[in-house]
Length: 200
Image (cartoon, rainbow, N blue to C red; front, side, top):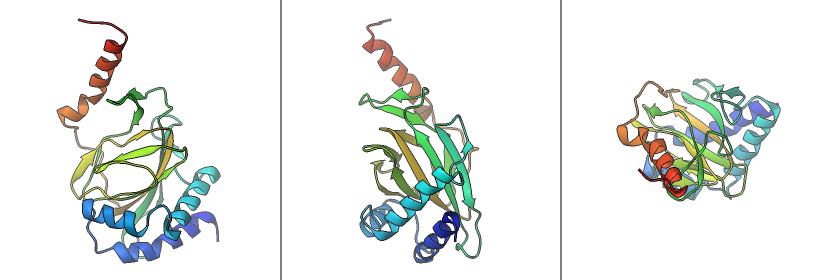
């Protein structure tokens, strides 16, 4: 059995367990308490996801350069209880990064929505690297955005792989960001200009 098939087979019992649960803050807490960084499931999935990136079958398609890549590993099937499996790689060392309010380098990905929510395994490749979920920044562990939620994926502190499971494979990149979300990069630029000593 190859590592890709091993990851799929390792995912199936987990998806059977969670298939009738609803993503959101409560489920995110449950995931991190039950299958956190020290659990056998997390360690197996993280290991196989890293192997997938190394072998070129996970997160192998550039979305916006080599520091932002994504690929679908498995379409929704009866075997996976109609979840799809996808991996994304993001690295905040990208030249397009910006500074957040705490002066961390942040890389932002494509704005998107989760019609039915998402279960997201966060696998940092650098110590201290984090992915921003709807409940805040997350290192090793899980995020679980609610059905109907929308956001920009963001990473800081280095490179992160996210292995995510989508109910019915549903994700949409057709939404327009809210004005406050769209203006984050502009606010970051203003902070940089002020730090350099420029004033209007």
